[in-house]
Length: 303
Image 1 (cartoon, rainbow, N blue to C red):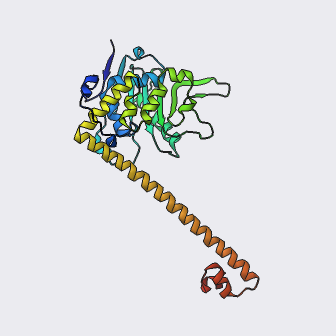
Image 2 (image 1 turned 180 degrees about the vertical axis):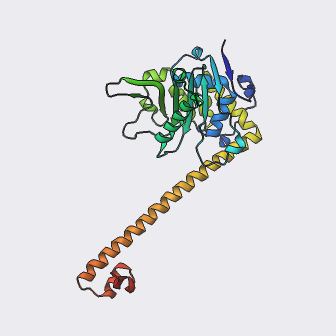
Image 3 (image 1 turned 180 degrees about the horizontal axis):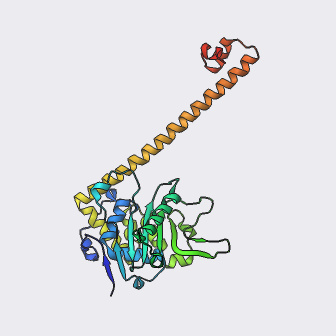
């Protein structure tokens, strides 16, 4: 008999009828790629999570016998953080750890961070003991809104640890990447397992789009999204989280622009000094050099 465990949360969200009072205001729509909403939806709705995992892992839903959520989130402590949080940590069928993360912004050190997450889960299994023979596989799944390698766009790819002849070193660590910006690169097999439909759900920016996708698991997710948005306190938390992420992105863009501006100014100053030295070596008067480069007479005299 199958079972699902979403820690600390009852699960009244799996009936389509429960969404009768849907929150239809398109202006209030928050994308499923919002990390807090993602966590809320898939910890509240076991049917949606089961279908998502089935698509991501390429297995039948019937093969998923037990789901345990290992990281129930303390929402109030997570809203204002500027750091990306690991969205879902799952123990699947009591024999595999699944780490699922939504990554919407291009993060320079993503591969290093992902490796650390996976290795940490490998290490946690030992609990300070020798447990080589009991080590369970860890699968890190990243749902991204940009290509990991821009010159080699791929919709969904699995990375293993293997040699040049494709001999796998170990099956205990795998990395899957779903690129939401590369749906056009999806294979027929990936389409048949529902990955394109789920990518469309993650890319949706309004209720009409997400509710038009004809897949039971996505309809379950949409129903739960609506119910969350009808709850004033939960809706407020989501907007606070969205604003916190927007603030972070704005700060990062401003910092990059300031860095570019400082770089431009330093480049201009360096060019002016170079020009001033050249003119001075040709015997040009300091007054003319000052007018040409914008340097002060004192700066020119020190050259």
